[in-house]
Image (cartoon, rainbow, N blue to C red; front, top):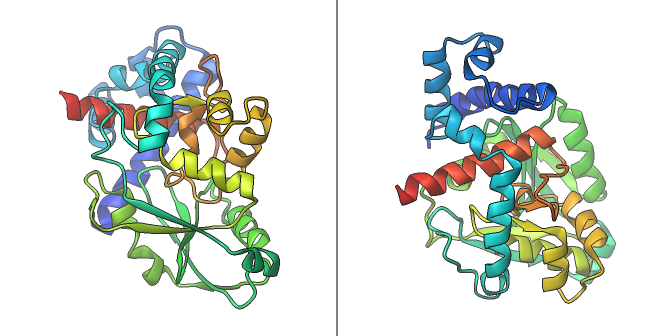
Length: 288
């Protein structure tokens, strides 16, 4: 995907997120698409084109993916398949759009050294879900964080805090090479993307479980805790999810509350809903 396409998608996303936020603020029971398009300073025609271009579905269909009823339905279906999905990495939900990921965790010595002697390249890039910070090492991707409200300093602080002794170098040309592979709708399933993760043993177990949840599926914090053999540790799972340093690739957005509510997200609840609905749209397009 050319950088220009990612830039266009990133700009489109800003309006998508605003539409989701308006829906949240006004608590529409039935979305008034004409009113939404007016508030986004778009004609109904261009409003339709915006969603078709960004998500591949109509606004009405996209917004249906954001309902509590839809979330509950997907949650129930995913829960029935959860053990098989996490154990094998496969389910009835297609994985054609999922990336081939290989996770490597830091050694105990590397964890203790807090990144001493490690060089981390980073860059800010447009994505289909807004601007993001991508950070890489010679061992793999160690950070992907979506930027909220244009606050680059906040995500840089998060990266620096995780790798206190590492050398951080701004090298967008180097990190930009990964963007197409990360956000391609048809990723190369033969070429793995390597993730280099740093966390406690429990956090890493949670993140490894999340990587196995396929696109289009949703699970609860309780489901993940149960799978890990810690059924009473849903709060600890939630903390691990909240501290996920590699958003999107480690799909913490696919974990929601047990009653179907989307819950919080490090990069903002509106972005979480956009991610979930966008993935649902991709699955629908594939099955059509």
